[in-house]
Image 1 (cartoon, rainbow, N blue to C red):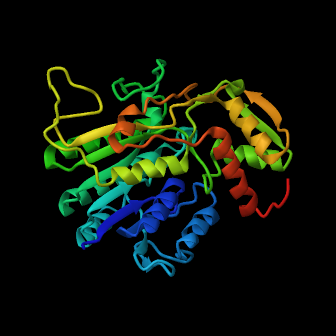
Image 2 (cartoon, rainbow, N blue to C red):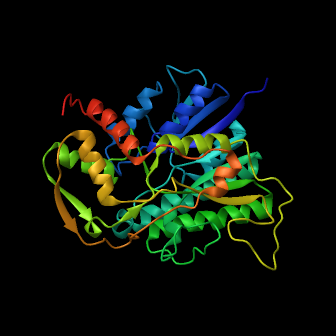
Image 3 (cartoon, one colour):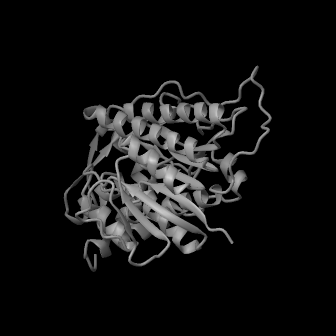
Length: 357
């Protein structure tokens, strides 16, 4: 039986790490992970994630490829997606069946001070992926978008039928650009593409610049915890394993043509091309202060709270209507915030070597 070959970009990142783990456990794929391992946050965490999969990437040069010491069906390549010639040639040589593009320059606030990094990684890098898919006839490209594309929308819950023409950060603008670029390639070259608008993903092995990691660090070290918008931020916190389960089920389910779509009354998020966009979230929003309280309970300590105004580029609320994806893949996120935070804290205390609360 033919083994499907899949490329996962951002494999040293948070969601990429968990997706690779899921793919390895399935035994159904030959997997190649790709990551540039930049220093947007502590590279030690990225290397530690890779080591869980038998990859020692310390000392690797860009364009180096190594085989996992634990899993014979997993290889890792250190590369910058914006290295156009290498990425396209590599994808053409490997002939992947499926591509999941999770590599990106993340972070809303960082995009305020480092805009060029976002165009480099998220626009130029995504073009490399699209061209690689075009020339190697990939069966399905799944790529990470973001709930931030909804920008100034205030009607909740947010659904794929709503406009996304008013982003309020360069990060979200580059992700909207990805959706437009994907549609163009789906239309011109019949590449099946699916964009996923992630809603505040959290869990073990998460990014240290995300709220949960920052809050846990502050509580453990007894430092003030900065709570923006005075705790009234509302987020659709979604546990990483729920995200990964949905992606896994989606891989072999590209959009099938013909699609019922009327160009005279164009439905957003769909097309006459093999293109679709889905929200992927828990559909159960909570205020940031509830998130903090769940963390305090799991750690067993009370935070020193420093309430602050909302930051430029941040949206005050997100709430996903994820019914379209749930119906499409037959799975609904099931991890409560309280349980998810508890699982994160168990991992965090172990990873940091903090035993006892």
